[in-house]
Amino acid sequence: MFDRILFPVDDSDGAVAVRDNIYTLAAAHDATLHVLNVADTAHDSVTRIGDEVIDTLQQEGERLVEKVASQAAARGITTETAVIQGGVAATIANYAETAAIDCLVMPTQGRSGIEERLLGSTTERVSRETPVPLLTLRPDTEPLSVPIERLLVPTDGSDTAGAALDVGIDLATAGDSTLYLLSVVDTGLFADELVAQQYADSLSAAAEDIVADARKQATAAGVEDVVTTVHNDESVAAGIRSGAAEIDADCIVVGTHGRTGLDRYLLGSVAETLIRTSPIPVMVVPPVGRTDTEQPV
Image 1 (tube, one colour):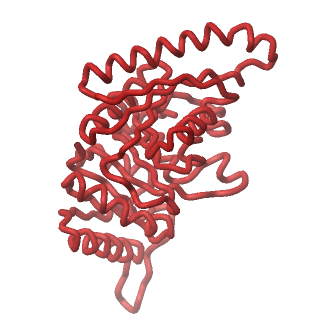
Image 2 (tube, rainbow, N blue to C red):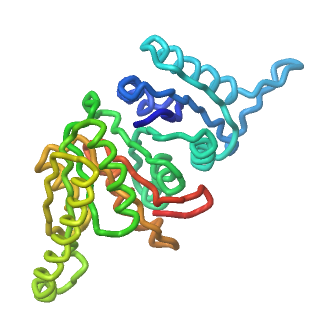
């Protein structure tokens, strides 16, 4: 399913920790692994030694990509390498588009304090710009199981959720996986508990219709094992995490939703919340037709 996988590398502990899982994924799909390092132009990287001017970030990037490419080649994986100067998130997104990447894989990296709330991690910023599915892996994750046995696809019936469903169906078909379809009724939308109770039945009924429609699409596409469920929870992200834990899911496949303005940075999206908090891999699927100039959430 994935012919070209992109792994942006740096010297962080997270990037080192997920390498084996990325090699496993590339080998299982017989994919070409694109190894990219972005020499961040926000940093002064030029050093003068005598009469020689040396771009230290460029040199370090070349060392990193060659090291990863050598490790991948030892496992029989075909690689392509690149070191590009620019802003990190935009450069990764642009490379994914121009190189016709099928899947982008990055580690989650924890931050703390106000910086995380306002800016988020590099992986979160890439999730807002990527034109291709982004698979996020926790550095402390267990060895990746390929093909994935239990896929969870949350859906709210929107077009962006539909894009994630399409990818989930393709993964389930290719891997003969069990596809779990989940719709979460967000009870946190109602400040008054009595009001929430009044609308609970109608919202749950609508959610049941949503997962039923998704099931029809999955079975029509040839997925044999499909399970549907509806959860009530105080937030969509909490409901998804709870649903994933109940079925011991191996991966969550979720769509991104457009949002602009200050709330995008202060609140984040369901996808970004899952990237930050999910104990299992999360694949973020952008809306169909996204370009790197859009500002999705």
